[in-house]
Length: 206
Image 1 (cartoon, rainbow, N blue to C red):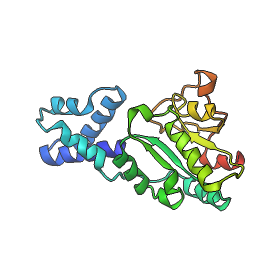
Image 2 (tube, rainbow, N blue to C red; image 1 turned 180 degrees about the horizontal axis):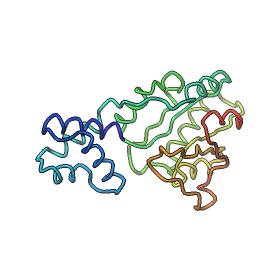
Image 3 (spheres, one colour; image 1 turned 135 degrees about the vertical axis):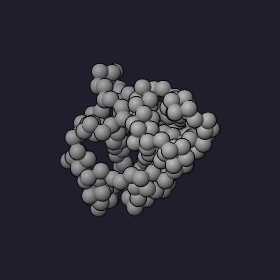
Image 4 (tube, rainbow, N blue to C red; image 1 turned 30 degrees about the vertical axis):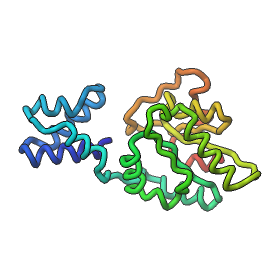
């Protein structure tokens, strides 16, 4: 999300001569306030740039992102223990694929186990992608005794489906960089079975 707003701010700065940092900060502020950031961008700076132009940059840019500290090492350790890794994520396919590519996740995650929910009716907590990931694993590994673990950070939607399906659920606690708050006051089925403070703590649970 942030890298997308950076690209939009960069465009506006080059095209209209406004301050890039100011535009970026405003876009973030409007986003967090759940306002129409791109409409406000035009309104605030008196621009007539098409909203679709901003949307295309935001959706299709190659994000400038890197893995957080310790993630690569943890993924290496999981692969060394023959853990099959998958991804379940909501959003536009092209945007999510760009993120996956930018982070180099293809090095660790099985292509057949990456599920991008583009249709809103499939968004978490819907079971759609979880069921398909389970089916994929059972088709590949037959009658092997398979245990499923899900790691997320948003109690509002991440853990409901895997809890209902009998998975072990793990929440990575916010270190101040999350774009959404973590609220653990919901129903029991929305709560993770484990909470960890750093990604490497997964190795102590599996």
